Length: 187
Image 1: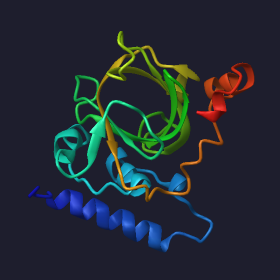
Image 2 (image 1 turned 90 degrees about the vertical axis):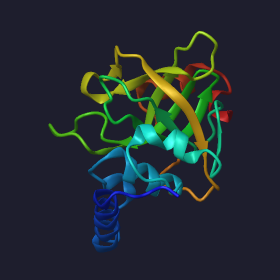
Image 3 (image 1 turned 180 degrees about the vertical axis):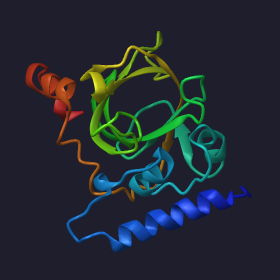
Image 4 (image 1 turned 180 degrees about the horizontal axis):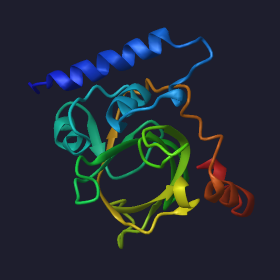
């Protein structure tokens, strides 16, 4: 059994209280905080702890793999840039090497980190097209960031995902793909 640190329990309780006390018009996309509680709420996958630990924690509890699927959580490895890793939820598969994800605490918005972002482009730059290395849209520069991030893979939930995972609001890259690649939105 995984021991959940008190700080994670407190953060999850605070997130639940925030959602419960939010106005009826508030959605998960109004969230400001860390990626882990956001991914848990958006995907329905009940894993706790730092993002980089999710891959191993999912072993035996959830199916895992290297094929993106809507509602799956992508697990970024721990690196010097991502000391705690990162998790995000797939909101749309656009092409074999392009998907949209919805996540929190990546780009700055209004000068601060932590905000949720919907339908952000993720591009597979791995040599074998296996989603082991990716580039992520970075709102701060309105483009794919220059960094390449190693990825462990995808954790597949039970399908009980948040309604905000629509894939209908792509960033610039996704909108261009929709406009110029026949059938791209049908994946």
